[in-house]
Image 1 (cartoon, rainbow, N blue to C red):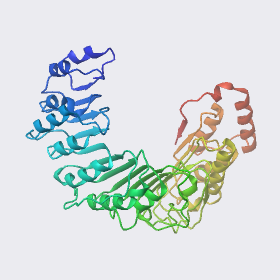
Image 2 (tube, rainbow, N blue to C red):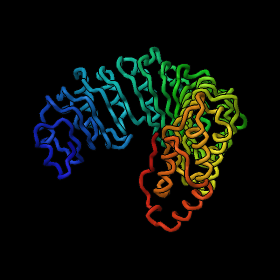
Image 3 (cartoon, helix red, strand yellow):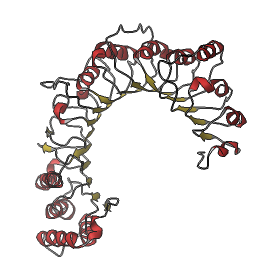
Length: 440
C-alpha cells in the first residue's frame, strides 16, 4: 500500500506493502511485523536496521536514500558493533542505492535467502563485496551500479564464485575506464555461470572488455546500452565477442562505435533488437543468420537481405525515434515491405509485421496481397499487422480485408492517394494514441 494521504496510512491494518518518505521510528514500530512483505524507505538502512531485522516476514526492501559515501559517524560505528550477532535475515530482494561499505559487508553474510541484489557500489565496496557473494546460495539476479570515478586497483581474491547467479547487470554513473582490466577479470571470476548480461551507460572500451569471448562463457542473452564521451576513442575493426554466440541481443549504443560491436554473423541468434540504432547498414544474409526468429529495427537502418530462406523469421518491426526523420523512417519501412513482397520465398515463416512509421501504403497492400490473397502452401500469411495511428479508418478496413484474403475493389494507387488526402484533411489522425492492430 502506498500512502497518498501521507504518513497516516502506516497505521492501517493489515499492511503488506509500505512505502513512505516520512517513516518515523514510532510509525514503523506500529506496523505488524508478522505480515509486512515489502518496504520502501528513504531513510538509510543502518539507521532503521534494528527494527527491520524484527520483521521476519519481510522479503523485499528498497532503500532510496542515505548519508554520503564518506560519512561515518561515531553512532554508525556503534551500530556496526551491535550488528555483529544479528540473526539470519529472510529478505529475498534488496535494492540499496547507496550502500555504505562497512554496513553492507557486515550484513551481507546474513542474507542467506537473498535472490535479487541491486546495489550501488564504490570501488572500495566492490572489492570487498564480490568475495562475499558465494555465501548467498540462492542469489540469482545481481545489478551493480558503479558509482564515482574509478582508478586502477588490485583485483580482490575470489576463492569461491557466486555459482547460482544467472543474471548480471552492470551500469556506471562515473568514468571507470582506468579500472577496465581488474573490473572485468573480477566479474568473470565471480559470475562464471551467468546466462543474461546487461550493460548500461558504459563507455565503448569497458563494453568491449566485458563482452570478451574469453570472459562470460555461458551468456545467451545480452543487452548493450552505451554512452558516448568526447574523449572516448572509436575502435577500428570488428572483434569477435560473446555477441557472436548469444541467442538474444538488444543494442542501444551511439552509431559511432556500433560498427565495432555488431556481430557480422551468428549461427545462434534468434532475437535481434536494433530498434535504437538509427543510421547503420546491417548485412543479414540468411546463411549468416539461419536461426533468426524476431527482428526489431530502427527507422533509419538499412538491411541487406539475402536468400535462400529465413526459415524461422516470424516477426519484423520498424520503430521511429528522435534521431530518425519521418521521411527516412518511411523509406526504411517501405524498403522492407518491398523486399518481402518481391521475395516471399525468402520469408516463408513471416506472420507478424509492426510499423511505428508509415510505409508507402500501396507497397504494403502489394505485400499483403502477395501473401494473403495469392496464397501458397509453403508461405505463411501475415496474421497480425500493427500500423501507426495516422491511418484512416477506411485504410484499416482495407488491411483487414487483405489479411482475411479478400481482394480490394480499388487500385493500390487510389488507396494510397485517398489515404494521404484524408490524413491531410482530418486533424484527428494526428493525435498521438496507441497504434492500431489488424488480425487475421
